[in-house]
Length: 398
Image 1 (tube, rainbow, N blue to C red):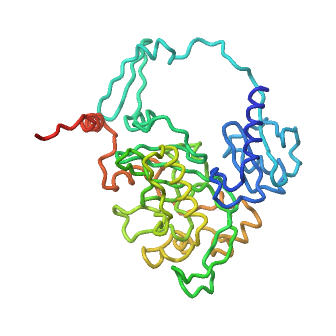
Image 2 (image 1 turned 90 degrees about the horizontal axis):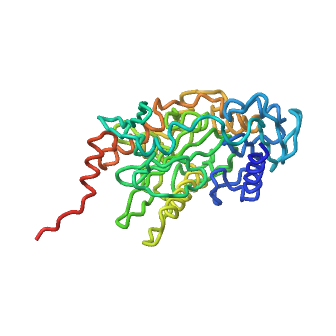
Image 3 (image 1 turned 180 degrees about the horizontal axis):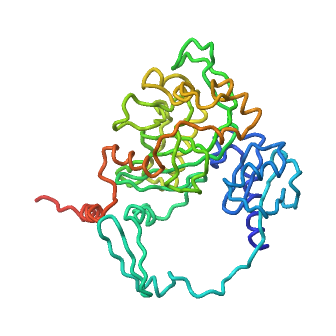
């Protein structure tokens, strides 16, 4: 499949030319120094695997990146064997040439005629499509609304934003950051203050698993969504591509990601954004601009500003302290042991049994919608009717 290979190679070359300041594509996120770009099929990640062999990388990522056992390895476009060591800035691609473009089978069930003649029926919380061939397919109304975009319109999403979940007030942008070594400004042991202007910080370098951030956007009067203050952060040991919105999330072992005394209507893992820089709200700002500006500010605030013990003093605790207390892994007994383990094995974080939330991406999003003080989420036929009625022009009183 030379055409596919050429397309992937061009994509990788473009990625290589881009600023390496963050796998999410935001140029103000801290540099992931010493990384190798690893690609297979639709997967493309910047990973801290410098010095490892192709065989070792294949073994560590074959399940996560769905690498076929017979896949050929290419480094910077050249075939290599499993004993080849990787250097910083190189590109490792796994490909499995097979088949050809085009098809000889009969037309798809969802061809032009089927699409034109299908009958759509909504009953309760299920939308069904009856096709001319006599078959029927169905989908939950909530998922149908997400797939249709729920009025968000055509939008080019910032790199790293895996999906947008529409809400009655705006949308939730779900951003995934691949496993990486990251430099943090972490509160120093000798710091006299636990939070605020008097905190002393030091630099630590920690290996992270997948980091999943929920950016909650609320619409303004002119219809452009802006970032709100109910944003959340989680860990995951697998990419969202595997189970999608049904991926179960874990609590992040990070300071300033707060646990509240009672779950109730509070966020599960709130990102403390008291000092988040204000995001512009110009009337001429497009949806894409607002989304990019908001996510850039949120990720910068989460990853690049100092980590202190504000959550321990203002909320119940931080999820870093909760993780340490739970003793999930001897390598996460302290930030010092975490840093040491990160030096030994930059991918060890994918093996840590982080504290489980017991909730999926979809369920966390539903919580945000339900407890956001907004209208009920669209999940049933009655909900759709409500949206239609509310969209009608309002009559002015005499």
